[in-house]
Image (cartoon, rainbow, N blue to C red; front, side, top):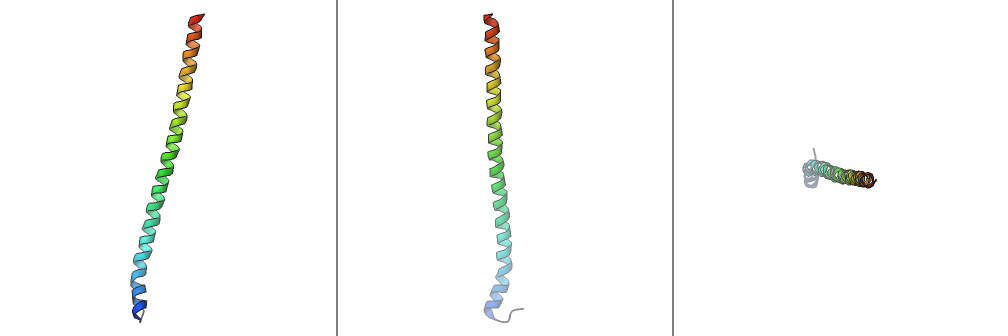
Length: 69
């Protein structure tokens, strides 16, 4: 147990600061992972939409070509 005033202050404030930092790092990691997940999901979604549109264009152009024959 600290015997000086500043030792007592440091001894009593340190656990609060450490727990606060652990909480801050945890919340920060959660928010960053959520942001990364959303960016990845948006990228995959855009790729899938582009693939579907390309398939639709290819299907419609082959249907148009078969009608012309």
